[in-house]
Image (cartoon, rainbow, N blue to C red; front, side, top):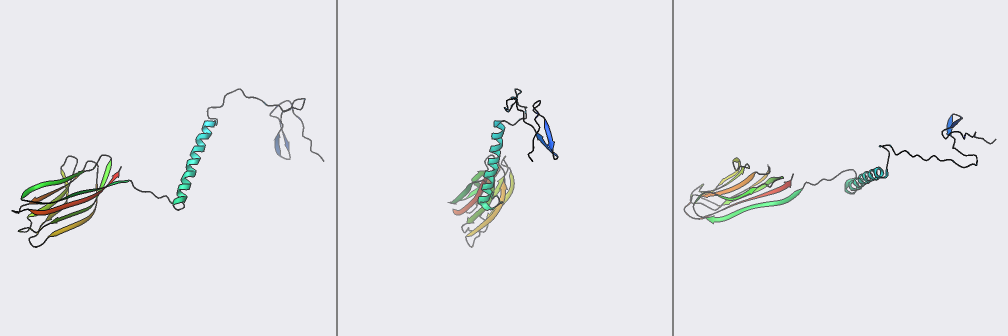
Length: 202
């Protein structure tokens, strides 16, 4: 038996219920034409617009791009790499005569940067007596006042001496690393002092 739906032309919102299911009856005129109401009111302030949809699509695309990036690395693991900007080497080596404590180089950490002191090497030739040659490396604050001594190294009268220190000392922007030498011998002697630092942008 065919199911006949009742016709309700008097309102576009008329509904009927069949077997517990609500149906909305379309509005049709006497000629059988479907009636469509055209709304003249503007959209609500929170209504979805083309711009809103474009924004959402962009956000979804970014999420999709991130998933692709994660997948290209290792599944759901994200690999990050610190911003190592540059490797800095400070170096001094010379044969010089008698002198009091003399600065050989000064490194200043640039603005908006950290620096990690990773390595220091110092050496002296044989001196006439012990401790006549000296190398000194200190960390200074931004006003050039000493904060700490990293290396204080002396010569021997019996052999050439050298020392290498692996380090991991973090310096902040404006702080300084300064190296100096002393020769209290009466003749020229060789002293060397080298340092390696890695700069990292904040």
